Image (cartoon, rainbow, N blue to C red):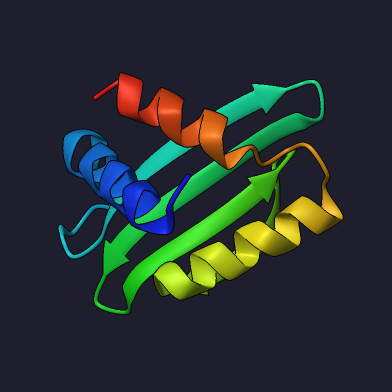
Length: 99
């Protein structure tokens, strides 16, 4: 899937499902993906620091990055460190479906 399309889908998902972190200066939306390789959690947070992505595999944090460039770099590393856990086409097609 093209990077621009991924960004559009995730931004729309965020706007629809975001929740406040308490003081309304930070908002988050979380996507969980389960497959035979384990559980992937992608947390997108918008706060004064910017757009922050946290990636978890089987409940353990594997990355925390700022911005879309950081997200795509972390996703590429995730494919190397945890083969099969990050299927971009499947994840973002399903995310788009729930919109």
